[in-house]
Each structure stands twice: as structure tokens, then as C-alpha cells.
Length: 235
Image 1 (cartoon, rainbow, N blue to C red):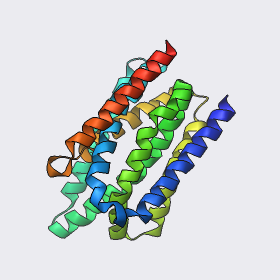
Image 2 (tube, rainbow, N blue to C red):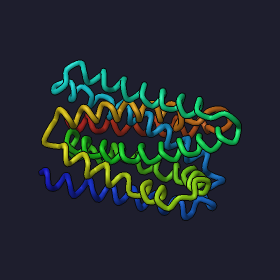
Image 3 (spheres, rainbow, N blue to C red):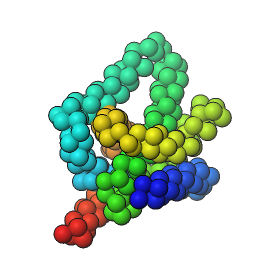
């Protein structure tokens, strides 16, 4: 079963890489639908996070006790403090733009690394239902490809593009290196959850005119349907 999970998780990560590359290639053609795609993906991600991923911390509580929530808080707080440091380091508008762009580029890489890590945990704990849960990651990867293309053009670094592209695969491989140590696995998983929650709240939920409420709600509703369907099947 472990070998099967490894193979499937690698295939999923490669699928995310393909979607990312495809999204960047056709970014100019989907720019006019960007708000709808972003809104739908945000709804899916929010629903998936709170209904399917966050409850996995209860599994981590088996190995880490209440400390699993400590690490969850540490991950969230760390990214917030890091962002504050980046902004305080900038002394003029041009430096703010430069540092913000670099922070966002690094954030995209870290997010994709954590997604690969989360995929492994999902397949280890949810089994076949992980296929439904990770749907939101594919939508978000496609939606973020337009944003990442603009960021990559500003950073203009082949190394940055390479890391960003293969980050999900690296995350999967790293997670499987820790799979035999449940304590380490869920320690990093809880940290990842804190980071991803901050990224979702700070960067992934569009606000104001950038959001299309109908598509956002649709994404949340689909997450509810998937969650309910999986619970019925389990029963």
C-alpha cells in the first residue's frame, strides 16, 4: 500500500506540475476569466481546508498531543512575522515593490512544497477519498498560474522558475522520507497547515472587485458536497 501511495502521490505532483506549466502557457488567453477562476478556486480551497485538511490535525494529536496545535500556530505566526520583516526592511517604494515581489515568489515555492507534503498525508489518512480532496489543489494551481507568470516575469530568474515548477514533487519526496516517523510527519504537517492557512487568508481569498461571489460560493458548495459524499461512503 505504501508503494502504491508513493506512486500515486508522485503522479499527482507531476499532474500539478503539468497544470502549472499549461496555465502559464495559456495565461494570456484566460486573463479575462481570471477573477472567476480565482474565486472558484478560492472557494474550493477554503472548503477543502476546513472540511477535510484541518480535521487531520486530530490524527496528529495522537502522536503530538496538544503540541500539534502549537506547531499549527507557530507556522501561521512565522509567516506573518516574516512578512512584517520583509516590509520593514524596505525603505522606499521601489524597494517595497522589489522585496514584495521576491516574498511572493518565495511564497509560491513554499506553498507548492507544502501542497506536495499535504498530498502525501492525505493519501496516508484518507485513502481513495484523497482523489476528491486534492481537486481544489489542481484548480488553485491553474488559477495561480496567471499570477505566478506575472511574478516570474518580474523576478526573471530561471532558478526561481525551476524551483516553483518542481516544488510539488520535492514536497512529495520529502514527506515520504518522513513517513516512517509519524511524530516528525505530523509536526511538519501542522506547521504546513499554519503556513497554508495564512497564505489562504492573506493571498488566496480575493477581496472587493477582485472576487466573483457566485463562483466563490460554488467552490465552497462543491467542497461541502465532496465532504458529505465521502462521509456517506465511509458510513
